[in-house]
Length: 173
Image (cartoon, rainbow, N blue to C red; front, side, top):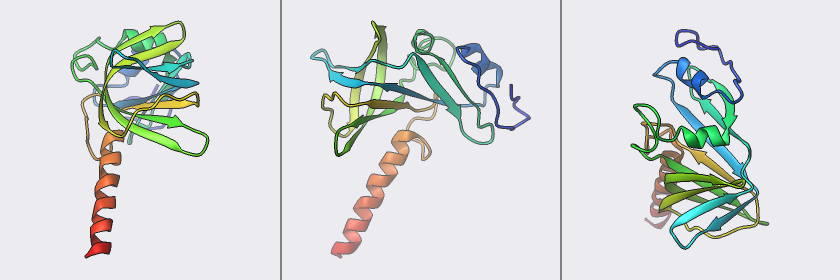
C-alpha cells in the first residue's frame, strides 16, 4: 500500500474498498465501469447491460494508485462516509461504442442499482444525447468532491467544447 507521504505508484487491492480509505483523505479516486450494452428506461434511468464484475479505481498524481473492487461493493458504498456520491452526485462520461463511432455523453449519476448483472442509474444529461446501443459501453466516474474541475472527465469535455467554439470563431472572424 502506498502511504500519503510515499507517492510510489503502487497498489492493486482487489475487492477492498477499505484499502482506498487507508491511502489517506487527500487521495481522490476516479472509477471506470464497463458493460456489453446500454439501455434507456422510461423512468429516467440508464442501464449498463452485462456490467463487469469489477470496477476499476485510480488516482491522479502524486499517488497514482490503482486497483479494482467488486462492482456490487462499489454500489453498496455509494452513500457511505462523509464525502460520498449520494450527497455529492458525481459527473460521469458514458462512452457508447457503435460500429463506426463513439457517442460520449456527460451525465450526473444518482441512485445506482445492480440487478442480475446490469447496473442502472438515474441520470441528468449535461452534454450529449443518449441513445440505446448493443455495442460495448464504458462509464468513467469523476472523483468525489471535484465536479467539473479542469481535470475531471466532465471538465475536460467542457474544455474541449470551449476550445472548439473558439477555433470556429477564429476561422469565421
